[in-house]
Image 1: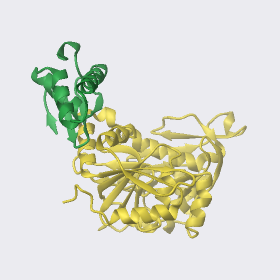
Image 2: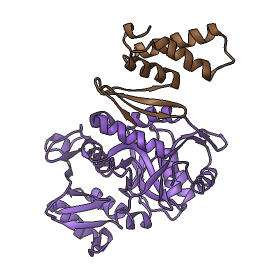
Image 3: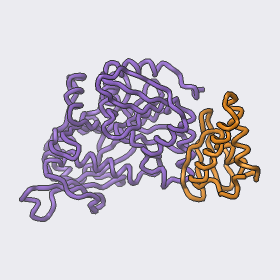
Image 4: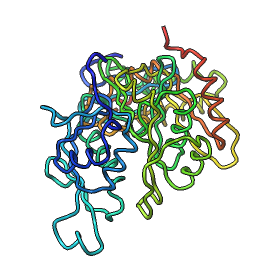
Amino acid sequence: MSRPFRRVADLSLAELRQHLRAGSFALQTGSLTSRIRSGLPDVARSIHVLYGNHAFEIAPDFSDFHVEVRQPRNLRRWIRRQVEFLIDGERPFEPLPRDQAPAFLEWGLNWCIAASCHQWITIHAACLERDGLAIVLPAPPGSGKSTLCAALSHRGWRLLSDELALLDPKTLLAHALARPINLKNASIELIRAFEPDSVWGPETYDTAKGRVTHLRPPLDSVNRMLQPARPAWIVFPRYEAGAPPLLTPRSKAQTFIHFTQNSFNYGPLGRSGFDTCARLISQCDCYDFSYSKLDDAVEVFDWLSGQLPAGTV
Amino acid sequence: MKANQRFLVQRWSDGCAVFDQETGDTHTLDLPSYEGLVAMQRGLPVEETVYAALCSLHPEMSADELARLAQDCCSRLEQSGLLENESRN
């Protein structure tokens, strides 16, 4: 990067809180800038921990999103306390319990991207890169996608995104966000044991997904978050208790259907969406992958990264 | 990818994806069904075309089995709105 920038960790927590209260703090994740306002101390602490390596600006001329996490201005500020997420002053969701504020910011930012970034095809998928080639892992909730993504991102794969694969219709490149990885329930202890040095945000209990927390993305993923990568593999992961690792080629036609079912904006993009997904799937090798042990999964993906896909020139 | 008046098609060795520009719907087809779709666009008999495609794919099957498969393919094309009834024969 030619322009010098400051990382969030360069700010003291008190300074960060001050900028968040003033609504002047703008966080860079990939090529997107989110201006965030919040007077809530736990939101500030979470940003300080999870985004310590990310670049930020103060009151930039332009931001992609203007969001706020705050307590409602009614009785729920005091009784059975709640928190709400706003974008451009509008509230797209019902409020959540007050202790879910840090997680609400993460989910809200996901929604902002999925709902408005139609310069890309956005897929509900994890996306990682190795040696310039990207792997896309689309999957419904509960499939073990984020757990696998967290493990791979600490074993030689660069994290592009845990939740949203951003695919450029012109270049077919996958763009990075390098945002924290959302983990829940038993996956939290699994990854804590798998990567003891990992850094975590606060845990939140009794959410719609159970117990959730976020894992800070590895430094290299953040440093290289402006580098896109060419997708070479599409793999549908599935966690199965006790299952041996099994990587099975899958039909491209079936991949097309399941891939587009995981897209947030395939329908609205119409012909362009079809064209993009068709070309993307044509250039990728497609698989199903079932697993139960992370070490086995890492070994399989290491092997896969050594196999040049059929579409590679 | 081939473009024509109504359908965009991406064909692979194991099937194809079809985007219907009139409805905005996407479908996946096996290759014999795709041949049927092409036949419809060219004004050729669809079921016969599908039958011929199935014959070359499954030479081990009996004529009855192939005819039943061809009917199934055409029915699926009709149900998905890709094929009008009158185009079938």
